[in-house]
Structures are given as structure tokens and as C-alpha cells.
Length: 335
Image (cartoon, rainbow, N blue to C red):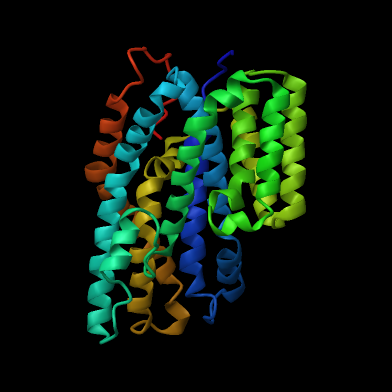
């Protein structure tokens, strides 16, 4: 498998994804206001396309990083451990922040707190998303994907294309059944598969024509069974990953670098901030809360990234697979 040039688009795509999601949530509270209601309504309606961008990126970058690290199936539990070190400490910190902020909010408003010991315990394992930070639901999907790709990575890269096509076809059929109610990954597997097949194309793994035809079939499937915005977003995302090679200015990379921290905190901080200040600001000036929420969230997320997320990423990067030296990376894959 040949490794191509540096993947310059990943951080920019992550930045776009998290800004899109944050725009959507912040716009929701302002969509009924007197200033730019159509604009904020548009953000609320389409901001969630950032989730599909994240899923496609994960579909691509996780197998790509496994390939670069010379992953083998006997490294499976080490892979899960690396993922746990990378993502779980920041998540737990964000969960604690969420519970503190929401707890104070309910107490000040003299309202019952919907969270209890059981729900908090379930939240620790991604099974429950607190009402005051509903974006946590995607972390469960990502965790299910890690369990899946760790098991099937070598299947995608070392088995005949006929077997790979049978697996992909089976997953697509499952995605349209009631099983999605029990394993959420199946409901979004199309977006991860687009990323996985993109990885096969990028690394020249297997028959190029079959890979391209498979990617086209997946894109057609996404347009047939999912919302247009989600389908077009996932298609554009994988095209950018595969074919965009120009340098990206650092100003566009910064949001992507701290995107996980922004994602974890933007709802409980940004939306709460808008809710709190709306009552004190005249309707004609409430649009300024949108900008304020963004600035505050990015500042807090940068601090969170520096002191919580980055140390977790550094710990994860120290864990290697077996005794094998990873291939030299052409891009900083802090995933």
C-alpha cells in the first residue's frame, strides 16, 4: 500500500464540523428573535451536518492510523485502551462540568434535577446522555465504531474484495432494520463506511476500480435512505480528504485541533450562557449572545484542551502496538 502526500484537510474539516454543530445549537435559541430569524433557523436546521463530517473522518482516520501503526488483531485490546486513554478522561471531566453547571441551574430555578445516581452511572459508560448536554449521544456511536473497526480492520485490508463487499452489503441491510434501536452504530454505519472505503482508496489497498465503484454505491445509498444534507455532506467530506492537498492556514486548523473539547463543552456552556443572558438583553441585541457564546466556548475549550485533552492524547500516543515501530507519519494523527 502506497502512502500519499500529507493529509492537510483533516483539522480544517474537524473545525468546520464542530463550528457547524455549535452554530446549530446556539442558533436554536435565537431563531424566534426579531433579528435574522431565518439565518438562525437555518443554522438550527442544518448545523447537525457536522456530526456526519465527524463520522466520515472517524471512518477514514481510525483505519488509516491503524495501518500506519502496523496494527494486528492481537493488538485489539491495546487499541481500545489507547482510545480510552485518549477520549475518556476529557469526557469524564466534561461530564463533571455538565453535572455541576446543570445542578446549580436547577437549584437556582427551584426545579428537580433529572439526573440521579443511576443516570450518572450510565453516563460514565456512554449509555445515557444528560439532558443538559445531549451531544454526548454521539460518543456512544463512536465507541461502538471503535469496537467494530478494531475487530474488522484486518478483514477490510486482507480479505478478498468479494468478502469485503458482502460485509458492507450486510451492514447496509442491517442499517435499515430494527437493530438500529439496539446498536446505534448501525443507524450511522453508512457514514463510517464511506470513510473506510475512502481509506482503502487513499492507501491503494485492493482493486482501485472496485473501491471507487463501492464508494459511488455507498454515496448513492446515502442519498436514497438518508437526508439530502447528510448525504451531500458525507460525500463532500470524503472527496476533500482524498483530493485536497493544498496547505491549510493555521487559523483554520486551530478549531479542529481543539474540536473535541469544543464539542464536549459548547452545549452546556454556550447554550446555558445564552439562556441566562437572554432575559437581560433587549430582543434586538440578543444576536450578540451568539458571538459571545462562541468566544467564551472557544476560550474555555482551549484551556480544557491544554490541561485535560492534550495530556490524555499524549498518554494515548505513548501506547504502541506490540514491539513494532510505527511507520513515519505524514500527518499528525492526534485522534
